[in-house]
Amino acid sequence: MQQGGKIARYLLCTVVAIVTFISSAPASYWQPIIKSVSHDAVRLVNANGSIWNGHGQLALQIGVDRWQVFNEPIHWQIGFTLHGMRVIVDDQNHRLFVSPLGLWLTPLSVMVDAGRCEFPAQSLEVFGGITRTVKLTGQIQLLWQSFSIQKRGKLFITPVNYEIDANSVRSVISPLPQLGSYKITGSVSQEGGVFKVSTLSGPLLISGQGETGQHGIRFTGEAKAALGMEDQLNGLLLLMGDISGGVAHLHY
Image (tube, rainbow, N blue to C red; front, side, top):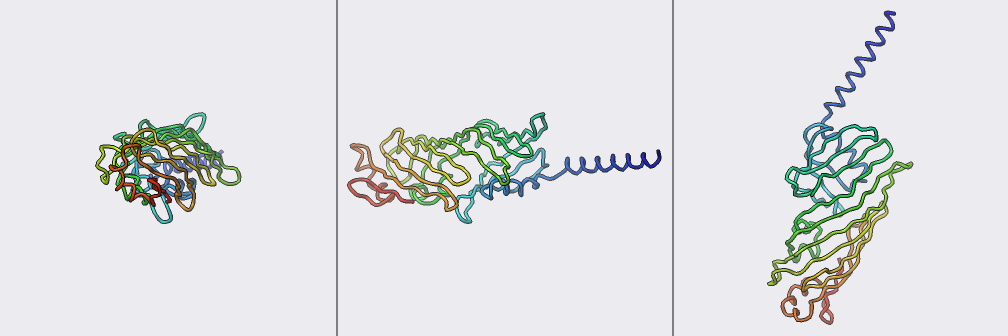
């Protein structure tokens, strides 16, 4: 009986030590996990707090050795349910996530709820090319459908369908109060992605299609002025691409 009591006490102390270690694990423990799951497309930086309740900043890879760090810190809370770990991610001032982002974590998968976030058009300058040349202002809204990341021998990401609305876009290069509103629809998966750009309204008409992948973002399209707006947009079009027949050909 004494031997059994010693074993029981030893097991109890071990369990208490493990629980104490896990409960006090720092937020930085998420950094290598996020890096691995995203194939180093997303990183968590400046992490503080605990692994269960903490905050940090997200960095998004936008090209080879090029990263965009979101200034607004995100906060997460983690709890356990019968379906697995429930993770709620939000930013304190609701400048990025319009509503909290929900995730379900199980040993073999990560399921991400559909969501929506907003950010200023100036953030697009980190992609370079046309976005840096014309210096856009306005508001960007990103919507995505639910998707999952599953473990099947190796990580497998189901296709993610998304929409981007760029509303009332302006440019310091143009004298016009706004250039227009635009929509980007696309899908991205583990192999890469495709997207399409179209104009919803406004004097500057943009259309085209592109691809995303390890090489970054590639886009081919055209831009032109609406009827009667040629003189006001001629200078901007000259900066956007090679002009032929009043159309700027875009290649980025």
